[in-house]
Image (cartoon, rainbow, N blue to C red; front, side):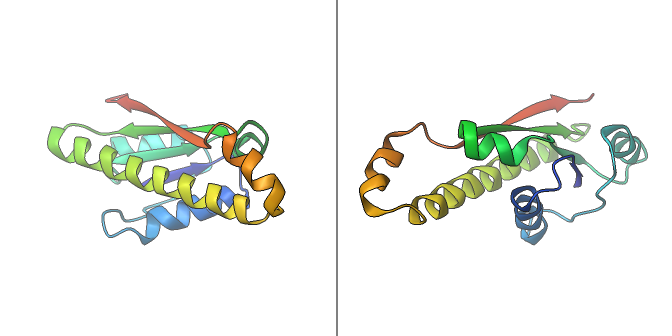
Amino acid sequence: VDVVDHSKSVYSKRLTDKIAASQYFILHDTPPDYNAAMLNMENDETDMILEIPASFDVDLVKRRESGVGVAVNSVNGTQGLLGSNYVMQIVNDFSSELRGELTQTLPPQTRVSFMRLKKMNIVPQYKYNP
């Protein structure tokens, strides 16, 4: 996996670390932009690109939602499908962890109101064979 982190925030670093810690992925590179990551994919150095937007942390805290881009080399269809499913599972797990942490920092009387807010959601955007 190549991770293009435009945010460079604590949250994006944690998501990157969570993916790197997974038994399913090897963090190959953290290129500065999508084009550099795509070059790695074209040279068969990586099979997946996770792109984190610059506003990732701000969107998570303020809007309760942020998107991440996922580009998968699906020349091997099964590997591409499994890889995209695994990364989705990791992103959803990260989203749940973050929501739980933010809930614990609130006073008890505010937690009920917080839990009624829209669930924090990180939405992957898949691009097959870009």
